[in-house]
Length: 557
Image (cartoon, rainbow, N blue to C red; front, side):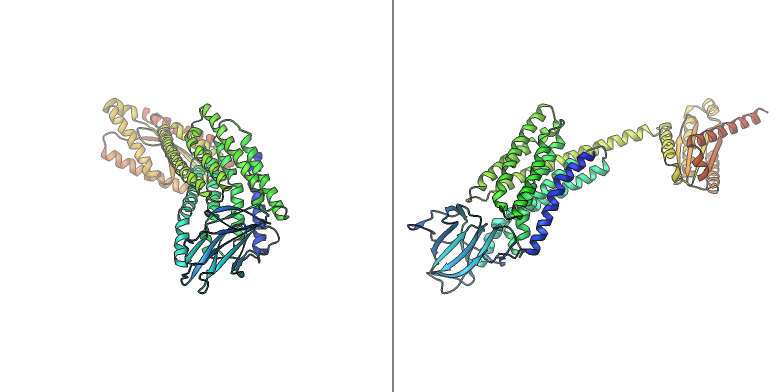
């Protein structure tokens, strides 16, 4: 158990401490040129773009495109339309690049060149708004993209032009599905954490760790998808946190998923914990390379991709093996696992094709996986609730006397065991044992129906007399017991008086009369320490039989 806890602490703890340390340091030391979006918009640019080459300018068939660099630089140009509205902008999305914009050779905008950071070369995706003013009509605008990590090809996204209001609508419409998916995934994450809490405390015999791991997987996925969203620029000035969170959440989100699959396995699978350890080591190594300016995070992401692909095929192999071994839990989630595997592989493939927003494919898979796992979890909770209700019903039947509704002999024995274990917590303890003196005569003269009514009458009187203070049991055919914990002797006497009054009332209204023999034993805290509750019960029981015999001797004389 301790080894398992240390394993989980190592996998999550070391990357978490390292991630928080780097994020905190980056927030305090990085000084990046931010490009927050205004609350307005975006639209398409009409004419084709031209790329500068050694032999001149050649047309670019379409954007987005992957363009070959010259000394890590790509230059493209176009002509500003003849009509420029008020608040017109040219919106350019950067992917780990720097940008300069020239109008007829004059610098009018730059992004990334004033960034200052102790480590790292590029800082994620960012939309830049280049103001297009009156007087720019018909002039040539050149955009110079520079890759600080020395890439041989530069991804140039669609370049959009128009009024800011139209721009906002365009960006919002492009990101609406992604934002909605983030919110849904976050809620699903909370849902699984709540389920884990309920299972942990309501069903202690059922493992809850699988739902915790699934909740962590959805939480990291929600963070990663959120950091891919352009809408963050409306709300966040300092983009360092989200840049790092994008990588950290992506690098670690496979770990809880692998642990979730491992929890479902009936047979120990060493490959899944081993992959978790590799992901953790990969996280540490990549960040050390990043901090010491050896490689940027974007340059080492390929190692995470390799681990993800390996994990996908490993999970599929494990799932098939478990299904063959008749693992019903694995069979129920196989379709979801296949969806995650396929969409994950498609996303990775398209990651290297800049013309496609790759994360939408994985987001689609996550959406379907959300639905499948949510439905499965809801089904499991219903099953646990029904099982709990059934178990509670069976336990009630097993520990309840069917005639009187009081606890039966089994319940009394369990109560004795519990009190004996916890007797140090009681200040006083009293046992009262009752026996019906005249049950046989009533059965013989009035019939067994009347005898049953007499037994029920005794139970009702005991309930009234000791309600809220003691536990009442029918421990034999005509024998009853009451346990009174924490009360005083005066309270005990008052309760017995109430019992006498209740019996008198019953006898006045019924043909069969209640006559009881009683034995009780009252102990303080000191006596409880020196003897067991079974001895106390035996004393009370012996006193009841002595009382019964003394009454019989009196009747005989």
